Length: 196
Image (tube, rainbow, N blue to C red):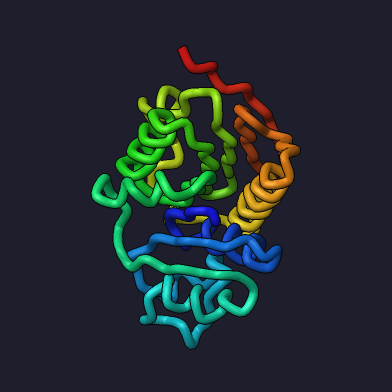
């Protein structure tokens, strides 16, 4: 089972692809579906507006996999969920949660898959033997990822993340300790700093 934090733009894409592959999922999200979400959060439709995202996801994905939704904002009080899973997927849209997940995964030796998107830019990282917190601890251009995002960028980043999770579950990761940066069709791949 994998743990997904956030079922927004990239998170809903990741969850859809992994569920259809039969990967069991635990997901955290405290938010309801808003009409403004629909252009980029492809798991939801007009009839889902006003419903909690984890409840909609459970309804739509449970026929493909075992899905457990947690209707809470992830914080340090839920640290035990990280202990239970081998793969943690950060699809959150705020720095506080990102830093917490990066720190906890670093301390516990867990694989962290990170996604972010804003405007026409996207970022994906697979962190295992590196310290992602050191990469994002200063200014991060992906701070308000819920604003002004090209829908296709969320799909691209979500698909890349889901594919890397599947490859990792097969023992054949392609982006371990690397970060992929996408902007208007241009792609850069950056090696992450090794743990000290």
